[in-house]
Length: 261
Picture 1 (tube, rainbow, N blue to C red):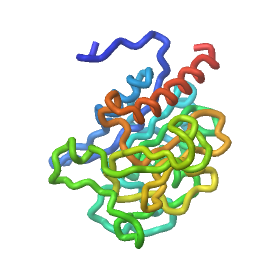
Picture 2: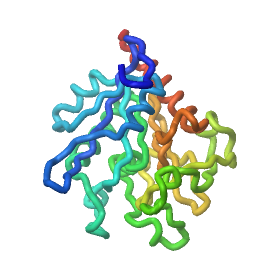
Picture 3: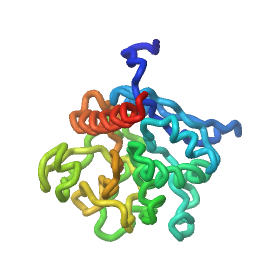
């Protein structure tokens, strides 16, 4: 057993975690998922399974075994060619290998009723995969704040509370956290953000500058939610994170039960 972790029941839902693709300074390539996402899945009651990559024709086989998909955050950005733009800042990292299979995975997971949770880059992938676009540099957009963290800050400061968000409408966030106008406090570590919203998405929460912070897929048959902040950071200590992960875990267990597993 991993140190400090509680054993999961044998029938715990299986949650797929797409890996990041990174290159070390020595040129060695890595495929990885950061530990806080693994821990968040376990907190939700799920059994995490990292998927290093896949071909488009393999997606249904992966979803056949999945009780949920969690799209992690990442230092990398979705390549802007997927929403009809050129790269604005070539110094920022991209991950075309991840784009290549997660973007087609998203609509397929939604269509098949596989619970889907997107975090930071993950919510951006959801928007792009469903036909939306991104601000490549939110801080350069008139009227928007700078949502980036500062590398010089200690890690607890980078991932610490940064700004409030406000619940919008009467969707799932209103059910979990309170009616429209309810305020929550979140962290903020992103340079990009949602611009043109995909038709399938509905806004669940916004930042004070109007930037979309949370979305859901309208009419989805299962949990299909994305958030722009990082609820995985010290999730067990954060009431908002725990509520999101509880809802996600319940959806994953319901899918597993519906398949007699």
